[in-house]
Image (cartoon, rainbow, N blue to C red; front, side, top):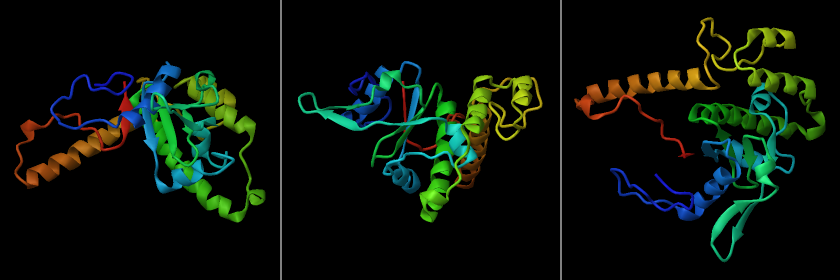
Length: 231
């Protein structure tokens, strides 16, 4: 557990420290955006490449539409406090995709599941964009504003099929991944995250059994090794 400035409150069972300078950046985002509870800093090659593009994340694919509006924020450092921050009035932004020029992209969410859902589609959107831009910007067909709005409106009305049908689109779903036929109201990314955890549990359990490891030592909830800052 950490306070906003990155000092360790409880080290838990590890002796690991924390990069206070880097953590100050995520602290700034949390303090500026009270609607966010999870940040995943994505720096895969494709995402890093898109973060270096002047035009940012282009509306080229369904995955980009799911990500929603992406805003660009330069990283700034206070020479006196040695703390990082972002410019461009972050507190006024509603975007959950924050592009850090030349430093990757922050995929944010109200929950861990939401942030992971954004991360999954962000990586696919950036990979598609990286391949497409090699043809030249003038040769690309961007998705319409109307199509992007339909995707985002449907996300707001999570799981309401009547709204979904009124919009006339069957390409994107909210919680449930578009295949939910039950009365369960999944939040964004919740079903996909639960499925991932089940797959990971089985994979780890199978590997541990093969190596004769006592499974009782491990918690059932195993989190994948990805860079998550959560508060």
